[in-house]
Length: 188
Image (cartoon, rainbow, N blue to C red; front, side, top):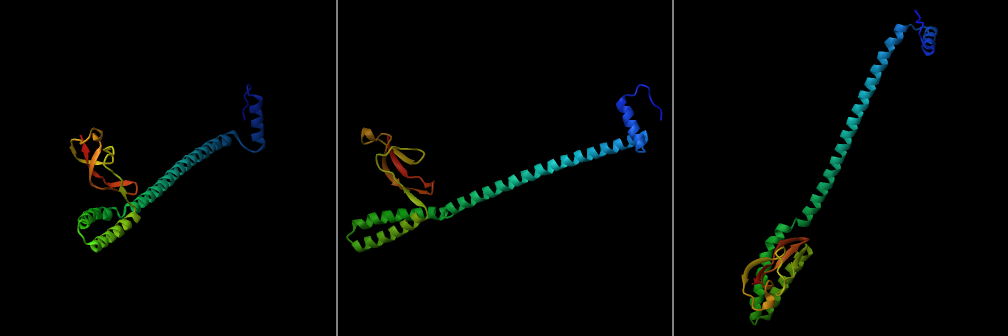
């Protein structure tokens, strides 16, 4: 092996160590690219691992969101499952109210009591399913978000301007949702 006169002490030490272990300079340089290949392969594996880990975390988060969304949808469906049936029953409640008003005018107390009993059973059954009557009275302030104005008439008194004068149809809520707005007449 040819020694360069300008070799540093460190280079001389390495060369001496290589010769003692039976390596030539060419064999050492052949090992360096193998180490670089191993380093590149390790870096590639680490990158792939990070990508797969990220993909797994995203998939897990997406699945958790799916579970939460379906749970919310299921709860909402149970809350309003009978909503269509209850909404279809509202005209029957209106008919009962009209029938009670007309039967009350007659002298037949037994008929009035019988119809009132059926009406109260139906009303109580619907109440247990979440139906609530919206309380609206004459003189209440009109609110477009919670009332439906059928018509406007001249207010009989100055204090009834912009107020509810008459309630044409009752309003109902099912849970927190208004399923029928009260139909009202307001003063102008």
